[in-house]
Length: 240
Image (cartoon, rainbow, N blue to C red):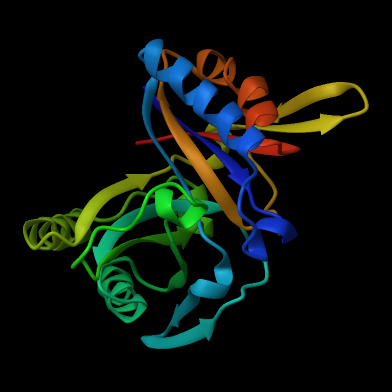
Protein backbone atom coordinates (compact mmCIF):
# COMPACT_ATOMS: atom_id res chain seq x y z
CA UNK A 1 0.00 0.00 0.00
CA UNK A 2 1.04 3.59 -0.53
CA UNK A 3 0.79 6.40 2.00
CA UNK A 4 1.44 10.12 1.77
CA UNK A 5 3.01 12.00 4.69
CA UNK A 6 1.98 15.67 4.47
CA UNK A 7 3.39 18.66 6.31
CA UNK A 8 2.05 22.21 6.40
CA UNK A 9 3.70 25.47 5.48
CA UNK A 10 4.19 28.46 7.77
CA UNK A 11 4.69 32.22 7.60
CA UNK A 12 8.43 31.88 7.00
CA UNK A 13 8.08 29.70 3.91
CA UNK A 14 5.11 31.73 2.71
CA UNK A 15 7.44 34.76 2.78
CA UNK A 16 9.75 32.96 0.34
CA UNK A 17 12.57 32.05 2.74
CA UNK A 18 15.38 29.81 1.49
CA UNK A 19 16.07 26.75 3.66
CA UNK A 20 19.32 26.88 5.59
CA UNK A 21 22.05 24.28 4.86
CA UNK A 22 21.31 22.42 8.11
CA UNK A 23 17.70 21.83 7.09
CA UNK A 24 18.72 20.70 3.61
CA UNK A 25 21.25 18.32 5.16
CA UNK A 26 18.67 16.81 7.54
CA UNK A 27 16.10 16.31 4.80
CA UNK A 28 18.63 14.86 2.37
CA UNK A 29 19.78 12.44 5.05
CA UNK A 30 16.25 11.24 5.74
CA UNK A 31 15.41 10.96 2.05
CA UNK A 32 18.57 8.94 1.49
CA UNK A 33 17.69 6.61 4.35
CA UNK A 34 14.13 6.12 3.08
CA UNK A 35 15.38 5.46 -0.44
CA UNK A 36 17.94 2.99 0.90
CA UNK A 37 15.18 1.17 2.79
CA UNK A 38 13.20 0.89 -0.44
CA UNK A 39 10.14 2.74 0.87
CA UNK A 40 10.43 6.15 -0.80
CA UNK A 41 8.30 6.60 -3.92
CA UNK A 42 8.11 10.38 -4.33
CA UNK A 43 8.42 13.67 -2.51
CA UNK A 44 8.03 17.37 -3.27
CA UNK A 45 7.91 20.76 -1.60
CA UNK A 46 5.72 23.66 -2.70
CA UNK A 47 6.52 27.29 -3.31
CA UNK A 48 4.72 30.16 -1.57
CA UNK A 49 1.05 30.67 -2.29
CA UNK A 50 1.80 34.23 -3.44
CA UNK A 51 2.92 32.59 -6.68
CA UNK A 52 -0.32 30.67 -7.13
CA UNK A 53 -4.09 30.99 -7.22
CA UNK A 54 -7.22 29.48 -5.71
CA UNK A 55 -10.06 28.40 -7.97
CA UNK A 56 -13.65 27.97 -6.84
CA UNK A 57 -16.14 26.25 -9.11
CA UNK A 58 -19.81 26.54 -8.29
CA UNK A 59 -22.76 25.99 -10.60
CA UNK A 60 -20.54 26.08 -13.64
CA UNK A 61 -18.97 29.43 -12.69
CA UNK A 62 -15.26 29.83 -11.96
CA UNK A 63 -13.84 32.30 -9.44
CA UNK A 64 -10.09 32.96 -9.52
CA UNK A 65 -8.52 34.22 -6.28
CA UNK A 66 -4.89 35.36 -6.70
CA UNK A 67 -2.32 34.51 -4.04
CA UNK A 68 -1.16 34.89 -1.38
CA UNK A 69 -3.79 32.52 -0.09
CA UNK A 70 -5.35 32.24 3.34
CA UNK A 71 -5.76 28.76 4.77
CA UNK A 72 -9.45 27.97 5.12
CA UNK A 73 -10.66 24.39 4.70
CA UNK A 74 -7.39 22.58 4.12
CA UNK A 75 -8.18 18.91 3.77
CA UNK A 76 -6.98 17.35 0.55
CA UNK A 77 -8.77 15.02 -1.86
CA UNK A 78 -6.40 14.67 -4.80
CA UNK A 79 -3.62 16.42 -6.66
CA UNK A 80 -2.00 16.48 -10.05
CA UNK A 81 1.42 17.80 -11.00
CA UNK A 82 1.56 19.35 -14.43
CA UNK A 83 4.41 20.89 -16.42
CA UNK A 84 3.32 23.98 -18.33
CA UNK A 85 4.72 27.32 -19.43
CA UNK A 86 2.49 29.51 -17.24
CA UNK A 87 0.17 29.61 -14.26
CA UNK A 88 -2.66 30.37 -16.69
CA UNK A 89 -2.13 27.03 -18.43
CA UNK A 90 -2.30 25.24 -15.07
CA UNK A 91 -5.56 27.08 -14.35
CA UNK A 92 -7.03 25.85 -17.62
CA UNK A 93 -5.99 22.27 -16.83
CA UNK A 94 -7.70 22.51 -13.43
CA UNK A 95 -10.80 23.93 -15.13
CA UNK A 96 -10.98 20.91 -17.41
CA UNK A 97 -10.66 18.59 -14.44
CA UNK A 98 -13.37 20.46 -12.55
CA UNK A 99 -15.71 20.10 -15.53
CA UNK A 100 -15.45 16.35 -14.92
CA UNK A 101 -15.45 16.25 -11.11
CA UNK A 102 -18.00 18.99 -10.49
CA UNK A 103 -18.08 21.90 -8.06
CA UNK A 104 -15.14 22.26 -5.72
CA UNK A 105 -12.05 24.24 -4.79
CA UNK A 106 -8.51 23.99 -6.12
CA UNK A 107 -5.22 25.54 -5.07
CA UNK A 108 -2.50 25.83 -7.69
CA UNK A 109 1.05 26.44 -6.50
CA UNK A 110 4.54 25.96 -7.94
CA UNK A 111 6.50 22.83 -7.12
CA UNK A 112 9.99 23.58 -5.79
CA UNK A 113 12.87 22.87 -8.12
CA UNK A 114 16.46 22.56 -6.81
CA UNK A 115 17.35 25.98 -8.21
CA UNK A 116 14.48 27.56 -6.28
CA UNK A 117 16.44 26.88 -3.09
CA UNK A 118 19.85 27.79 -4.46
CA UNK A 119 20.91 24.37 -5.72
CA UNK A 120 21.91 24.35 -9.39
CA UNK A 121 20.57 26.42 -12.25
CA UNK A 122 17.42 26.04 -14.35
CA UNK A 123 17.79 24.37 -17.75
CA UNK A 124 18.28 26.81 -20.60
CA UNK A 125 15.61 27.18 -23.22
CA UNK A 126 12.84 25.51 -21.20
CA UNK A 127 10.05 27.95 -20.28
CA UNK A 128 8.01 25.35 -18.40
CA UNK A 129 7.85 24.58 -14.73
CA UNK A 130 5.92 22.20 -12.50
CA UNK A 131 2.69 23.19 -10.75
CA UNK A 132 0.58 21.29 -8.26
CA UNK A 133 -3.16 21.34 -8.95
CA UNK A 134 -4.65 20.41 -5.56
CA UNK A 135 -8.34 19.67 -5.14
CA UNK A 136 -9.83 20.06 -1.67
CA UNK A 137 -11.87 17.36 -0.02
CA UNK A 138 -15.66 17.58 -0.07
CA UNK A 139 -18.40 15.91 1.93
CA UNK A 140 -18.72 13.37 -0.87
CA UNK A 141 -15.02 12.52 -1.05
CA UNK A 142 -14.78 12.23 2.74
CA UNK A 143 -17.73 9.83 2.63
CA UNK A 144 -15.77 7.70 0.15
CA UNK A 145 -18.13 8.29 -2.75
CA UNK A 146 -16.17 7.35 -5.85
CA UNK A 147 -16.55 9.21 -9.11
CA UNK A 148 -18.96 7.65 -11.56
CA UNK A 149 -17.65 5.27 -14.19
CA UNK A 150 -18.43 7.90 -16.83
CA UNK A 151 -16.43 10.56 -14.98
CA UNK A 152 -13.58 8.12 -14.38
CA UNK A 153 -13.43 7.44 -18.11
CA UNK A 154 -13.35 11.17 -18.87
CA UNK A 155 -10.58 11.69 -16.32
CA UNK A 156 -8.59 8.87 -17.91
CA UNK A 157 -8.92 10.50 -21.32
CA UNK A 158 -7.79 13.87 -19.92
CA UNK A 159 -4.78 12.26 -18.26
CA UNK A 160 -3.89 10.27 -21.37
CA UNK A 161 -4.14 13.32 -23.60
CA UNK A 162 -2.13 15.58 -21.31
CA UNK A 163 0.48 12.90 -20.60
CA UNK A 164 1.06 12.46 -24.32
CA UNK A 165 1.57 16.21 -24.68
CA UNK A 166 4.03 16.27 -21.77
CA UNK A 167 1.74 18.30 -19.47
CA UNK A 168 0.56 15.66 -17.00
CA UNK A 169 3.30 14.20 -14.80
CA UNK A 170 1.57 12.48 -11.88
CA UNK A 171 -1.82 12.26 -10.17
CA UNK A 172 -2.68 10.98 -6.71
CA UNK A 173 -6.01 10.51 -4.96
CA UNK A 174 -6.27 10.19 -1.20
CA UNK A 175 -8.66 7.89 0.58
CA UNK A 176 -10.98 9.51 3.16
CA UNK A 177 -9.22 10.93 6.19
CA UNK A 178 -10.87 8.35 8.44
CA UNK A 179 -8.25 5.94 7.04
CA UNK A 180 -5.41 8.26 8.08
CA UNK A 181 -3.62 9.56 11.15
CA UNK A 182 -2.62 13.03 12.37
CA UNK A 183 0.54 13.64 14.43
CA UNK A 184 1.31 16.73 16.50
CA UNK A 185 4.09 17.87 18.81
CA UNK A 186 2.94 18.46 22.38
CA UNK A 187 4.35 18.76 25.87
CA UNK A 188 4.07 14.99 26.03
CA UNK A 189 6.12 14.51 22.88
CA UNK A 190 4.73 13.42 19.54
CA UNK A 191 1.12 12.34 19.88
CA UNK A 192 -1.39 11.17 17.29
CA UNK A 193 -5.01 10.40 16.69
CA UNK A 194 -6.70 8.47 13.93
CA UNK A 195 -9.03 10.09 11.41
CA UNK A 196 -11.41 11.40 10.40
CA UNK A 197 -9.65 14.76 10.63
CA UNK A 198 -11.00 18.20 11.23
CA UNK A 199 -10.08 20.64 8.50
CA UNK A 200 -6.97 22.68 9.21
CA UNK A 201 -6.17 26.30 8.30
CA UNK A 202 -2.56 25.66 7.28
CA UNK A 203 -1.69 25.24 3.62
CA UNK A 204 0.13 22.17 2.36
CA UNK A 205 3.91 22.66 2.43
CA UNK A 206 5.27 19.38 1.08
CA UNK A 207 5.07 15.61 1.25
CA UNK A 208 6.67 12.23 0.72
CA UNK A 209 4.99 9.11 -0.61
CA UNK A 210 6.05 5.80 0.92
CA UNK A 211 5.36 2.13 0.32
CA UNK A 212 4.30 0.32 3.47
CA UNK A 213 2.38 -2.74 4.52
CA UNK A 214 0.12 -0.84 6.91
CA UNK A 215 -0.60 2.58 8.36
CA UNK A 216 1.44 1.70 11.44
CA UNK A 217 4.40 0.77 9.27
CA UNK A 218 4.19 4.02 7.29
CA UNK A 219 3.97 6.02 10.51
CA UNK A 220 7.29 4.67 11.74
CA UNK A 221 8.88 7.34 9.57
CA UNK A 222 6.77 10.19 10.91
CA UNK A 223 8.84 11.21 13.97
CA UNK A 224 12.00 11.34 11.85
CA UNK A 225 10.18 13.26 9.16
CA UNK A 226 8.84 15.83 11.62
CA UNK A 227 12.30 16.35 13.10
CA UNK A 228 14.05 16.55 9.72
CA UNK A 229 11.61 19.03 8.19
CA UNK A 230 11.13 20.91 11.45
CA UNK A 231 7.33 20.82 11.68
CA UNK A 232 4.87 20.41 14.53
CA UNK A 233 2.19 18.42 12.69
CA UNK A 234 1.76 15.99 9.82
CA UNK A 235 -1.09 14.05 8.29
CA UNK A 236 -0.66 10.51 7.03
CA UNK A 237 -3.17 9.46 4.37
CA UNK A 238 -3.62 6.27 2.40
CA UNK A 239 -3.51 6.68 -1.37
CA UNK A 240 -5.76 4.91 -3.81
